[in-house]
Image 1 (cartoon, rainbow, N blue to C red):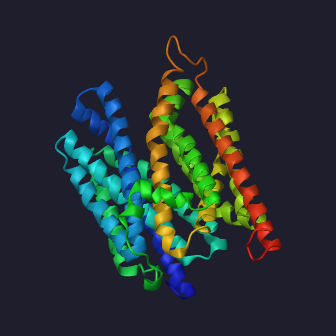
Image 2 (image 1 turned 180 degrees about the horizontal axis):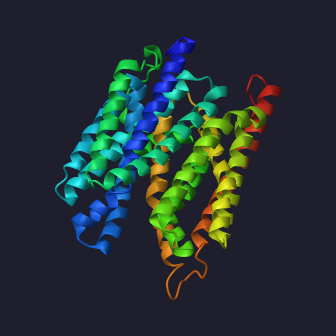
Image 3 (image 1 turned 90 degrees about the horizontal axis):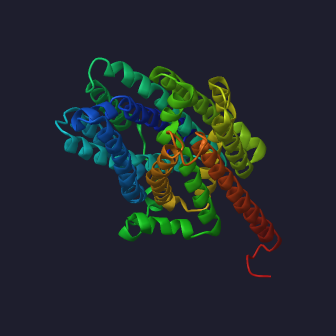
Length: 420
């Protein structure tokens, strides 16, 4: 582990730069991948279904691979896993750039789902080099780097896509290769040999990894909050573009500009506001405040009668960004240093399950909310349901927080930890 202040700063800088480069690389292909799928499939209707299948493939591989990669980082260290993942991403983007047919492209998405699971190791690395009381701020910085990547990636991909639908894939490969070279030269190892854990398939398989989340009552509850948060968040990937263009008649450029605005807001909230909020309110209260404001924002978006009110609803919704890093921080404080990679793998698996189920659910609800004879008479039903899910997450988080406070109070009154 980097022992000096400057060593920790260099390590944190690498993690943030690598995270941003990886997300930019992933975001670059967003504007052109659906068009490439449509070109291979030869049908707009079939392309829509296939695009959903490609999303599910990516999320499914995240579910399978995340615990394995997290456990490998607990055994062999964070550095080799991160470096192998970045070079694997670079090779995979080259594969997709050269894809001659749909099957080759599908294989590329499967490999991307595996190699991008290194995000679990990025979070574990941050846990290694930051004390527990500073982890929420550290995770907020990672979230800000992700958001910055999602702002720049699609914009850059849209520009490159004007030249060639293959150009963004080559750019993504170059960025991932750059992240590998930077890490090879700069990244120190964060997990000391004496703190490593023997690799076990019992813990590394996705269902075995989830058993870690049942090892502590509060960890189980926080994992439930994590699932509901991810489930609600996927309403954006499922219906946001369709909803904005259908209800407010926005063009693709206007939707893209709004997504960039949302990413910039999220970057500011996670990178700037998370630290002061945690310092003033603590991890648990900050998490609950973020979830409540996220629910308010989603409800306002669903009810917004005009495009201006829809945009303004993004402001309270942006405070949702302080919930994720504090939730991550709370969970890391309940496992040992040798289990951080396994925990992040389990968390990523939970998010992947939500990533498979949520788009299918919200897509079906949205389809039932439009048309000449909709089942749900209000087009904003999906956003209102997502707000309800997030409010349920806030309620669950409050319950877990109260139980934790009661447990801590009991331990202070009974230091031995034995029953009264």
